[in-house]
Length: 179
View 1 (tube, rainbow, N blue to C red):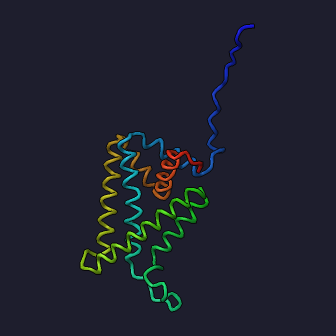
View 2 (view 1 turned 45 degrees about the vertical axis):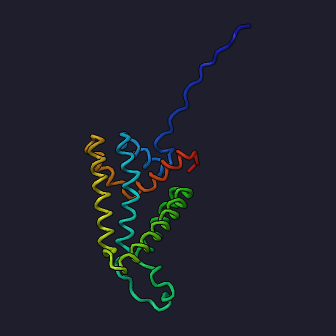
View 3 (view 1 turned 30 degrees about the horizontal axis):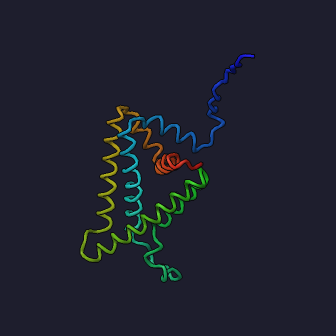
């Protein structure tokens, strides 16, 4: 008896309606970020954008609330930004939301170091945060130009709320973690 060969069909691609919402977002971002240089710029600039946004929210004065006096400096407008983002990300992907939470805790620590630097005579936290955000936006813009798709940068602005999660998704794929 000779060898029998079976023709295996390749697995069917999932239909758009079978995908989780986060997978639809990731597919759109993957499609518009094919250039390796653009992806590297995103891996660097997207976290910096998050840092800049958190720093700007942190710098906005928070009202004095009696029962929060013990937490002065730790509870501020950035706390709301973090809470809303993590809640949204948790609905999309629990594992990725945990990674984002740890990243935001790290950024919060870094922002507190910027505050310490400001108190020691360094630049204002708001100025540092705006500078970080502008540099990150410039990197994103350059990445879009390198990609060669003008629409890519415009689509990215529509997906800006999911792009930090996409960067975490790309990292977890490299670590072979299921999101």
